[in-house]
Length: 225
Image 1 (cartoon, one colour):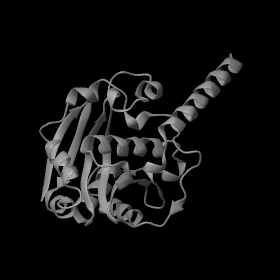
Image 2 (tube, rainbow, N blue to C red):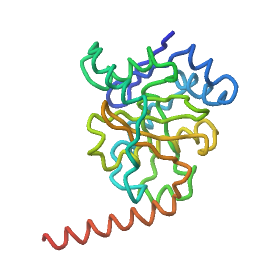
Image 3 (cartoon, rainbow, N blue to C red):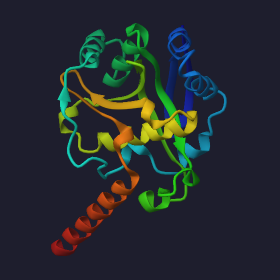
Image 4 (cartoon, one colour):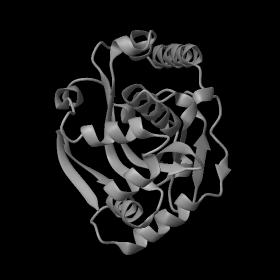
């Protein structure tokens, strides 16, 4: 059974869960995830999503290299979802197909947020005092891990999808109280899939890399002028 809510977060985000799969896959090991997903329908701080930074627009890298391309079933699921062509946009076709027919997908467009006081490095990374927010495309439970998936129509061209999905995992870890070691991240389209372990990423290394990017960008701009 699919339950849905329309969230007023600038534009309307259609948050949906598959209640039976959620209960079946999260009842024992991930009860806190189930609790968070269910309470988000009635206890989501909508104002956070209208003010602060979004994970989807972050333009710095959390990994030195792009994750390796792998073979994974989500690529086939994306292809089947696109072929269904029931909705007007690719994202909705892939997400709804997976939520409806994939036995491991439990939620789509899940709202998440991170408060500045929840990590020491927040202001250094984001130069911001308002909460970071986002919506997770797809949450799956596979191989006893919580998988954070983002559908990208041209996954092989993505530069910052790892950053986006890493912070999705970090935010959901903070919201649910589940350690980051229980998460995996990935992004995909109907041809390519890329995955990584978010628990291997060190925030201090992100800061160093972010500062390097900012310095390089500033230097390049100075040369052009």
